Length: 147
Image (tube, rainbow, N blue to C red; front, side):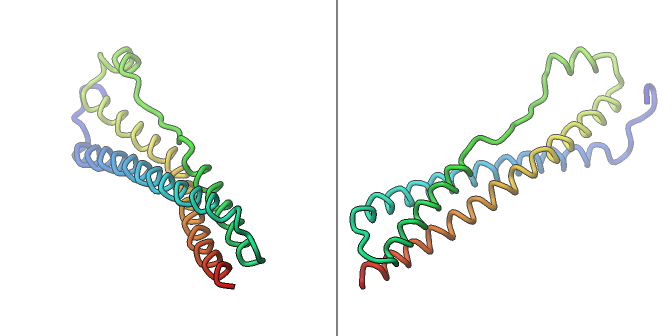
């Protein structure tokens, strides 16, 4: 591609890829925050209900809160975060045409996005499961306390 003009849509695609990579990072951060909140509530519920288990419903509520805490803790684990190495970029692309460099950077951003997407989806499933179990725990614990 040396000496040839950059493909006409390269700038647009590069901007979209950068935006999506940023949005993906924000989604991951938001899921981490939610996992932390669920972990906190589940931990409090476990601590409050453990000494007061008197029936099967309360026991199921305790187990559900503990399960929620475990799922939230797993979801809270750090995700991989590949990054560009400026030194290697300089060494490899300093003499390349601007269009070729932009195209390679676009390809690299797309690869990073595709690499991170399964981890974000896994984190989403874990946070959803933890939240569902926490809600179930609250209901079971409330019913168990009234019996």
